[in-house]
Picture 1 (cartoon, helix red, strand yellow):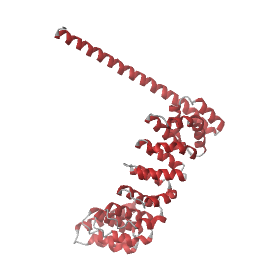
Picture 2 (cartoon, one colour):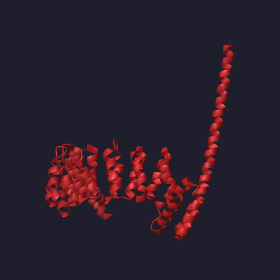
Picture 3 (cartoon, helix red, strand yellow):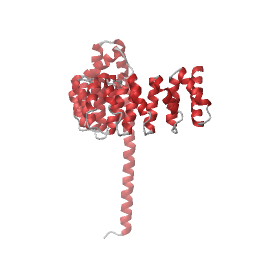
Length: 352
């Protein structure tokens, strides 16, 4: 039997050897990573020079030559062209497309089917900038992928919005259990009027409050005046968040007929709905809203007073007179202070 003190010595030796091995591994790893970083940077600069020459010359045959020359360095080539596609406009982008098609397209499509998430994500990000309708069939596979890959795939589909692509985007949105609503809003906003039919169809379905609210806001963001009647149907919705989104969308659509609906929403039981309705009334600049905006300055809620003040400022001379009247009254100090603040801001803005 090995004595306890010998066991302790053995344990310490093993621990020491493990620590030395770990230290060597970390040092070697840092050296390798540093070496790879230097190689990447050197290759990047080399490719960058040739790509800038291709963009400047506008010769397709030279762009094809560049693509074939660096085809064996897909990571670096992909990084360079994505860096430049965001800043290059006009005919220069055609040369980047040529380089992508001849140097990276085949690998991107292959990587879409990779088991590695990072490869799928890199491929999809490239396709966001360079995908066409012919690539949509491959991108559709990624709509059931992890959230970060799925959203990138949707962004790629939105760049070449065929009917099938749009249908897939909205179907994915409907089925997404935990959607990033801001990302969906940004992507769908870029679709413009092409999204009209699909938004109208979605509004008829049983969606969560969050998704329904985003679609209503989207109508105002694009904007889609043709869907005016579709969203005012939600102005009496029991959830206050939906009523807020309706008021916000109406303030963006700027349809005169919506004044009556906004006046009704300005008397809502929830102050958040009131505040948004009053803000939208200020956007519409309807004389019919003068009394409502004036009364809003006397609200116990700061946001209602604030939106009422600047809403009156938007009304021009009539609104300015109301602000001056409220600023001089003594019954409500908070109303007076808000009116004074808005008036001072108007004067400052005019002076600057």
